[in-house]
Image 1 (tube, rainbow, N blue to C red):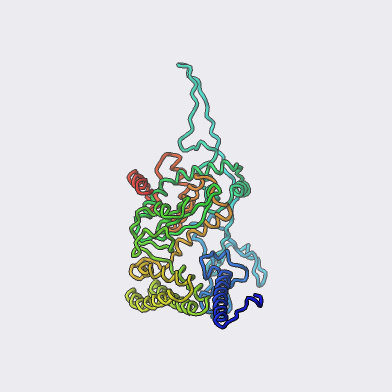
Image 2 (cartoon, rainbow, N blue to C red):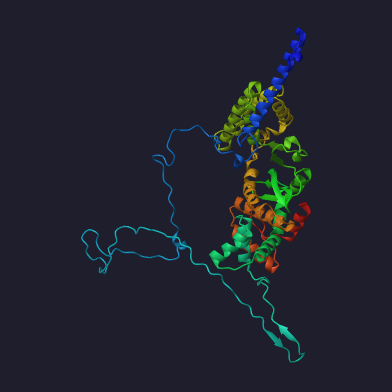
Amino acid sequence: MTDSELPKTLPEAHALIRALITSVEKQARRIEELERRLGQNSQNSSRPPSSDPPGTRPQPKERPSGRKPGGQPGHEGHERSLLPPEKVDRVEELWPERCENCAHDLGREKLRDEIGEAARHQVTEMPPVRPEVVEYRQHSQFCPKCYHTTTAELPPEVPISSFGPRLQAVASMLSGVYRLSKRSVKSLLLDLFGVEISLGAIIACEQRTSAALAEPVAEAHAYVQQQAVANADETGWRERARRAWLWVAVTAHVTIFLIHARRGAVAAEKLLGRFAGILGSDRWCAYANYRLRRRQLCWAHLRRHFEAFAEYSGEAGTIGDALVLLTEKMFRYWHWVRDGTWARSTFQTRMRPLRKAIEVFLQRGRVCGQPKVEATCRELLEYAPALWTFVRVRGVEPTNNASERALRTAVIMRKTSFGTHSENGSRFIERMLSVVATLRQQNRDVLGYLVETCERALLGRRPRSLLPGGRIMTAQALAHAQVSSP
C-alpha cells in the first residue's frame, strides 16, 4: 500500500482496520485448517494406519504400567503341548547306554530297571512331497461284428484337465487366500511340490473352483440378507484398470463379499437386498435408505472425528476434548457389559446420563464457530437414533470393526495385485474371500472344504453348504438362494 492509498480520515482508517482484521482472521482460520490437514493420521481421520507418516506415535490403548515388556514374575509360561499317542506316527524308545555317574555299562542289562515315566520329546517334520501322477491309458478296440472302433472312456472321478481336485484347490487357495501372484503360485508349486504348471493352467484351476463355489456362496448371500444383525462396509477396488468397489457384509456365522462398479445405493442393495435387520455401518450415503432405528453407526469412526475436533483451538477444541473423554467412558461401560461385569440393565441405566451429556456437547458443536465441526455435529444429531441402537438391542456392537477387519485381507490383496482384470476374476475373488471368511468364522477346515467341493463338482454332485452345520445343499435350498440373491 502506497502513501497515497492510506486513509485520510478517521472513518476510513477504522474501515481499513476492520478489513485487515477480517483478512487476518480468515487467513488464521485457513492456516489452522491446513495445519489440521497436515496433522491428519489414522487416529483422527478415516485414513488407514498404513498412510501414517514416519514418526507418528501410536495411540496407547491404556496407561503405561511401568513394567518391563514380556512375561512378568509369576506368569505361567505357555509351552507347546504334546500330541496324543494316536497322532504320533512313530515312537523311538531310548535307553541310557552308560551310567552318567560311574560309567557302568547299562546296555547289557537284561532287565531294564526304569525309574518313573519316560520323558517325552516330540519332533514334527515335513516329509518330502512328491506329486502322484496317474496315467490313464484309453485303449481302443475293433468290433468284429459292426467294424466300429470303440475307445475306453475316463471314469467320472477323473478330471478332463491335467490336474486333480486337490491340486486345483491348493492353487486356488494360494492365489485367492494367501494373495500370491500367478507367477508366485507357479514357483511355489514347483519348488515345494515338484509340480510344473503354466500360468494359464493356474487361471483355469481358479475358474473351475469359482464355478464349484457359485452355489454355496449364493446360498450364503441369501442367508446374510435374512439375518437380524449385519455389519457392512466397502473399500476401493480395481477391475479392468477401472475404479470399482469391494463390499462386505458380516454376520455372526457368515460373511459375504461383492465387487461392484459403484459405491452407491444400487451396490448396497445388491449386497444387502431387502435387509430388514439392524445394520452396522458408517455414515456413507449408500445406507441412507435404511431406517435410522434399524441402524448402528460406528463409534470408532466418531471417536476419530472427536479427536480431530480436539485439535482445534477455542470452543471447538474444548468440545472435542469432552466428546473424546465421554466416548472413552462409553467404551468402558460397553466392555464391562460385554464381558459380564455389568448386567445389561445396569449398562442401560448408566448410559442414560452419558448419552444426554454427549448430545449436549453435540448441540454446542453446532454453533462453535468452526464450519466443519458444526456440520459434523448437525449431521450426528440428525443421526441420533442410529447412535444408540447397541444400548437398546442385545447383540449389536457399537463399532463396525467386524466388517473393517474382514476387508483388511482384501486391501492387502488389492495393493499387491492391483485388483482383478476380468469379471470372472472378480467372481473368483468374491467367492474365495466369502468362503474363507465364513469357514474360519465357523472353525471349519478351509482346504478340506475346497477339495470336497471340487471333487463334488467333478462328479456332478451338489456341494456342502457354507451355512452353520455344513449340510449338503438341496435343490430347494439352491432354488431359494438363486431367487433371494440379487
